[in-house]
Length: 409
Image 1 (tube, rainbow, N blue to C red):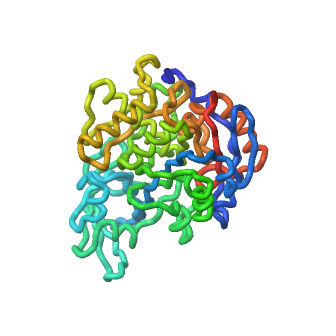
Image 2 (tube, one colour):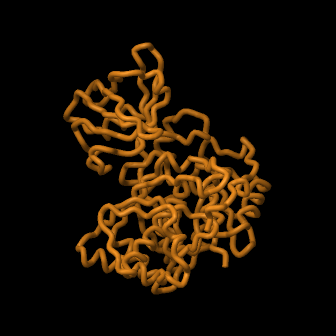
Image 3 (tube, rainbow, N blue to C red):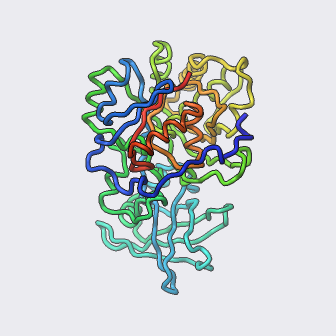
């Protein structure tokens, strides 16, 4: 059980000059560290297809980052910033962002003590002219606030207003404002459904040329959607992991992905998530399959809990193939092509990885749940990997370099 993990054991010195403030000019020109069974090497990212066996399945998170940061000015002249985290009404991302009526979001409010009562507004220049966007602060939600947004242009959707007046929310550790180039470079080339406040950064290195080389090699690819929340940057501030409250994120999985997983497992080929969000989604699917194998049901409102995987012993668990086939049968019997829900899954050392053979990911912050996820896959060799990266001038965090980590054991 990882409850007693001391987060001090997952700390390392990260020099400020190793944090990549900007991306490289060419996406696939970044360095890539390769870890396999204790050995560490490196190459350039565009050589990735040479490292993957034919028949492998890469799983990408295709979420798109929204312009979630809104800047207002209070009547006193003081600035105030609102960061949209997740929709509350309508609850569905697509319905909310396409709504032409008032919407509600869970939001972080920077300088909220300055905003006492009432509404605040800002003028947004849109292709249809100037629009007044109004925000009203509602209940405190144990950190974030419920914020109601309304506007005086019913022909425009809330999503269109965010594009026109919002700002791409770069990670706080970059210590800079969003620039014009970030609108393109802080999105993957395959981003589609809007909803994230942070990019699934492991995918930022992929280009059409890399995709073509993967196709030629016979490497398959499929997509999931996990809308990345601000909680991905939340450090573990408690002494032991058992006291940490893992953030919850929305996931959307199409039947085609579940079928691709079943086919790949049946062929005995590797399944490799691109990024920690893809890995959390895949492993969450396994635990949904476990529920079905054990005779339980799942519905549209399912949630995979933070500690759920650690409550069963290994001899009680079905194989990955059995769990995924149960999930595929559920979708077929339900005559649905889309599985929607939430995951709060915390993957840490001691977690029994069930589906993945490896992971493509960037280099993560010290004392983070993302670093714990890496350690779940390669054990204490995470220190060897990160020591090598520091010693060999790798660039860290969102705009940094990549790694291909093969599962240990």
